[in-house]
Each structure stands twice: as structure tokens, then as C-alpha cells.
Image (tube, rainbow, N blue to C red; front, top):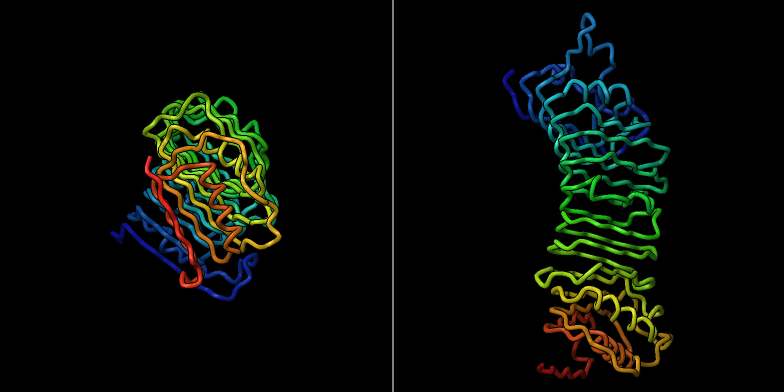
Length: 361
């Protein structure tokens, strides 16, 4: 009695995830502790429903404000019962739980933060409707994805999606659907070909793309961006109007396989950096394979182009044929002019008689 915060973490190394019998049964005394406001459970399963009622009255805690479930086995009916018993909850965290066929987060008027991480091996229905929700993070792991559909949320300020299946229509009419959204993250999401996004409230963007896509943004109040693109597809990112000069743009190109680099690659890089102007740009390139004689480019573009001024160029390379690598550097300096250049070369420098000359603008 009187306990407000409780963590019950059961660590198991060998178990069958889909079998409820392998999970430790949560003591009923914990669920009846009405003093609890903050509860974190891991590696357990909930008792049978008939143990949770007395004379038709649901006996489970009703003062919970923060609930975290990790690797917990809980069926749909129990999950809905527990949520209905937590009208004061404002923070819900569900990670890699089993037993679900659907996840419905509804009728929680005070819920502000929701973090869902799920390993999908079968069809799953996900629905959320919480009018006070301010932060929503969804992560799917697996090869099966369900299309995500979200209702309009007037108070949502942060939306982070990882490995989530979304379509082009997901980005329609965001100004009215999410009028206060400030932070948007799309990491390795699937299902869309184009992003046409307009939002005057967006301030922070985190994008990571693996498939070829066209990104068009109208976000005049953006403060900073972190964008990771594939070297093979070199996604096109364009903006309606110039970015604010105070905006910080962090562009990462990984993995960079030399077989994908030719003259057009430097042209695409120059175009992508030009679209990020006049923001403060940092460029990070990690080369995942050595530059060999099979690299397809024989030089850099011969015509003049406007080299984009950037703040920082960070380049990581493990092995390379030196003459070809210097040609690659020439191509980079054709596409951009960094104020600061950092070269992470994992080959001992004693074997690389390289001289780098710096220019002064």
C-alpha cells in the first residue's frame, strides 16, 4: 500500500513468444494497488479475466498516469479492459508485446504520449483516437505491414514513424489534420512514391529513405532537417521557396557503393545540395566498399556548375585506389565547397602520400 512507482522486469532468455504459458503471471495484488501512478512491466502476462472482477466490478488500478509494457503477453480483450480502467493515463508505452490481433487506443482523453513498437508476423489492426495526444511514435519490425491511418489531431506536435506502411494520400491536407505538428520523422517507411507536404507549423524534420521517391516540401518555418538518402537512388528533395538561412540541414548519404557512382551522380548531388540552399548544410558520406578499377566513372562533369557552399563535409573511407579516389574528391569539390572538411581514412596514412590544398574564398 502507498507505492506510487513500480518496475517489475522479468528477464528471460529462452521462451516461445506466441505461447502465453511461458510468461510469468503478473500477481493480482499489483493490479489492485490503487496507489500506483507509474507502472513498468516486462516479460509477464496478465491473469485470466475472471480474476479481475468481483461481483461484476473491475478491480484493476485506476490511478495510473504512466504505463509501460515491454515483452508482455496480453490479449485484445484484456488490453482494452486495462485501458478503460486508466482514465488518467497520459503516457503509454507498448514495446514488442504478444497476443494482439488489434491495437486500439481510444477513449483516453488525457493521453499525451504514445509509443508503439511491434514485431509484425501476422496481420495487425492499429487504431488511435486520443484528442489530447501530443506525441506519437510508431515502430514496426518485420516483413508484414498494415496501412497506417490516423484521425485528425488538433494537438499533435510530434509524429515519428519507423518501418511503417503509408501511402501518398497520407500527406494530404496536413494543415487542417495536424495544424500544430512541429516534429516529423519518417524512417525507412514503405508504400509511398511521393511526399507532397505542406505545413506552416513544421520546425524539425527527420527523413531516412531507402527507395526512390520524390519529396516536395512547403515548410517556411523549418528550423532544422536531418535527411538520409540512398546513394543508389539519390532522392530528389525540393522546397517551395528558399529555405531560411538560419535553418540547419544535415544530409547523410549511406551506404555509398562505388559501383553506383558515375558523372550523373555528382550532378544529382549538386542538385540536391542546391535545393537545400541557403540553409547551413552539413554533408556526411560513408563509403561502404572500396573504390576499385570497376568503378564506372572516368572523371567528373566537364562543364561549369555552381558549386554549393556548405558548412561541413565529413567523408569516411576504408580502402581506395588512390588516383580514382582523388578523382572522386574532385567530383565532390565540383558539386560543393565546404568550409570544413574531415576525412576519416581507415587505411594507415603512412601508405597514402596525399597532399590536400585548401582554398581561401
